Length: 133
Image (cartoon, rainbow, N blue to C red; front, side):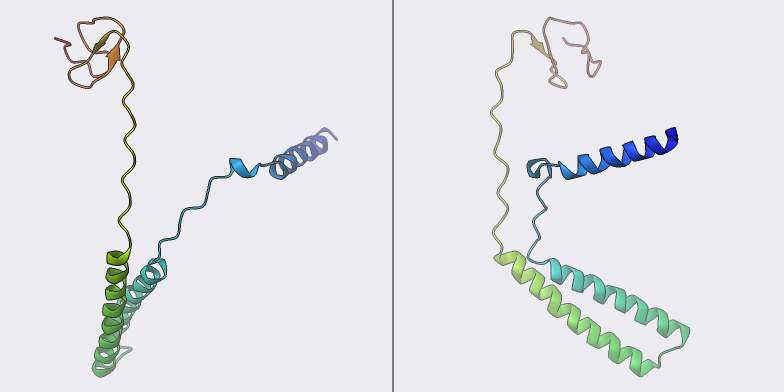
């Protein structure tokens, strides 16, 4: 009976928590790059080339079929790579993050090696362990 009560309580708490998740608590989705479909196509072509070579080595393909299929896949790959390059060149460069203003350091001393800040002078740095002189 008590085990059943615990299970029901866990289910109720989990359901309540799930239903009351606020939209602001959920992280925003990652932006989809414009070349995503091309990158997926490129990965597929590389996988197909690898499978083609494997099947050729097993003897499932004749030399002419292997060469023809390989050439077709390589041409398709060249087109996809050119499209990726064209879209990457046309896309605006990502903006560098804004530099945060450096807070004014409180009175004290900074380590000359690692930059750690301490309220009073010390013989050795508490962060990196090197001499503070």
